[in-house]
Image (cartoon, rainbow, N blue to C red; front, top):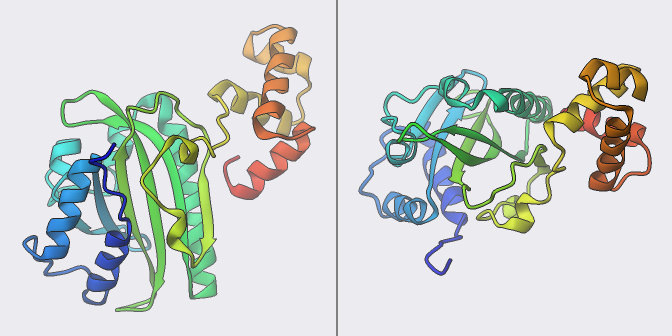
Amino acid sequence: MNSISTDYNLFLTFFNTYSQSGFKNINPADRLMLDLEDMMEKNNQFFYVDDLLQIQILYTSQRSKDMMGIDPEILNPYHFFEATHPADISRLSLGRAQLFKMANDLFLAQKGTALLSTNFRTRNAEGAYSNILVQLYLFYTEVPYKTIITLKIHTNIDWFKKLTHGYHYYLGNDLNYFRYPDEPLLLTGSMLSDREFEIIRLIEKGCNSEQIADQLFISLHTVNTHRKNILRKTGKTNISDVIYDLLESGVL
């Protein structure tokens, strides 16, 4: 871990340096870009910048080739739906829903920044699936027009064996919440399993435990065990509070 660089200020320096030009004419030989690429190689990362409202990628770092097997010049916004593990498509879709909700809040306020992170499995350069943490900075800008720019950092976290089902997000101007991922950061997710989310969705629709057991072809005892685990993991005392928080955050 001593070789890991955690200077995420480099990303902010990159954004502040090149945002005025629309992230055009970036020289890979610039000292800043060399430092960024060196840090990302050590951290097993790559990043790209896109215009969220125009659905257009403005810049992709060179390491997309090493990590994803994709040339930076041809990476498109839809690639990750094509490369995501089938079992994680719903996670990716929920993450995008939360992203657009936060972007809408920023656009209506016409100011501010936000952070969002989630993780899912996606194909790597070898064609196998890797667990990737995606950290997003959202910025409202009026240069050259009003839009939301996102800087998306992809970090390989295969060393973290759990796959959290939740989102870490923040709406405000303090970007110090972002850092190189460690276990405490990743464990701030809800850690709910796909089955637990199924049960929560059925409860939200008005199903009782017996109906849930019938629909999922599991025992009533198993349903009740899942309900207890949901409360334990979320620190809540009743399921209605869990549902309220998930609806408010855009996860459910």
